[in-house]
Image 1 (cartoon, rainbow, N blue to C red):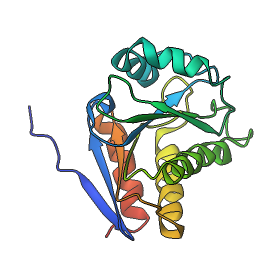
Image 2: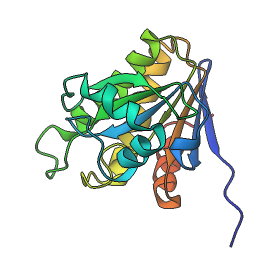
Image 3: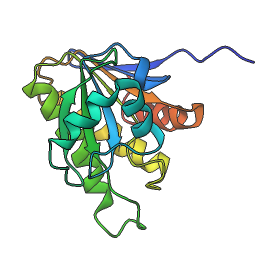
Image 4: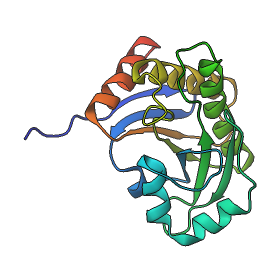
Length: 186
């Protein structure tokens, strides 16, 4: 077994962007961004893992939010997670690209940054939204994610000094690293 690759990173203004392969539920950041469903009810994949790690209090808190529209996000405490908050972003289900999926996915990343600014968060970790059961092509999603976050940070980083793209697999990380390299790695 080979050693894990060193994180790939880039600076955008005062913020450092990192791509890592890790379990997002273990990251010590101000907020993790969950790839949530519109009911905010927990589910499979990263959403289920975050709900299990945070404990039943997360399910209760999400139940009080009244769901969330696709392309948007809402915030809760992190409860039993190392992260202080969970931002629940609802990505689009891939339907071939004709259903405004790119714009809806970008909106998830923008809304999460807006919530980070509003709550004066310094560090944020994203999961690969919509690339699991929702079927969004991983390479396309990574490019949209990186482009959107880099644009937002360049315009107004708020208090953000660290943004992590936390990938569950090496393959997902490779897509994010390629997008970061293409978009102007520092």
